[in-house]
Image 1 (tube, rainbow, N blue to C red):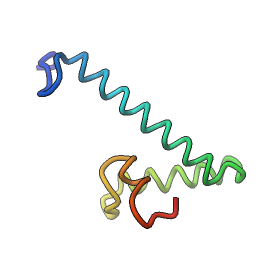
Image 2: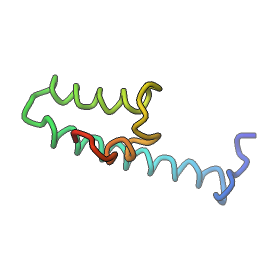
Image 3: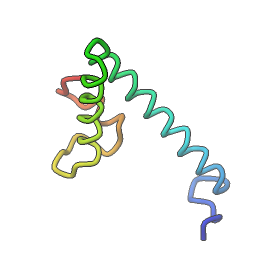
Amino acid sequence: VYNKPAEGYASYDALLQARAEEAAASMDLIMRLVVAEAGNQGYDGMRAVAQVIYDRRYNSTYDFGETFEEIIYADGQIF
């Protein structure tokens, strides 16, 4: 049932709003990191940094965390 409220949320719309806010915060963090790490490297350099973040999030061989925030703030990372 798609309109059933998720546990901890008053409504399905509240859940969607929370997920949208989380996604926006993640995107902002990723963009800031990409610019900080490779802003002077042009498009290819910035894309490479973004690809590393993406790979660490979606490739199961890495264990840096389950969210972009966990991956970016993990101890010992180059970022």
